[in-house]
Length: 148
Image 1 (cartoon, helix red, strand yellow):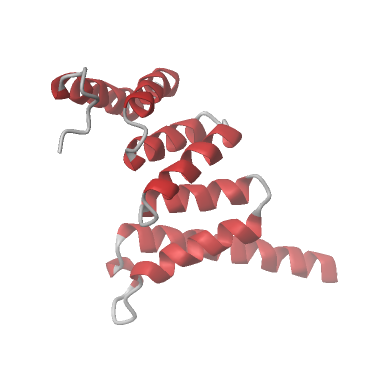
Image 2 (cartoon, rainbow, N blue to C red):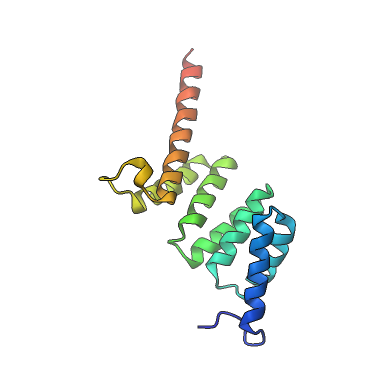
């Protein structure tokens, strides 16, 4: 299926996507965001475009915009582990720790294989697990500090 709007050839959208990725990978986040905003305008049903836009906003420390884009990505693709992890992490960063932990835990539970060692788990399971461990350490440190 051609995801490009009818008046735009697929190669033009592919070029725009390629340029956005190059800009993102070279940490030119302002310019990458410009391209990604055009992409979500042209193809508002593409969850992966919204996800990358949200991650790009997050890298720019634009938390509110990141939350909005990542939430849209998940509305379009509830199984997008990258969007889910980034949304969970961003929620924690803005103080919505409970909601963030719930998302991170959901990603962890989605693909965790009990028979595998931690380093053998898939990338997203490891990342969610590491974030949950860090959050737990922070909570434990807070509890110890408060009890002294």
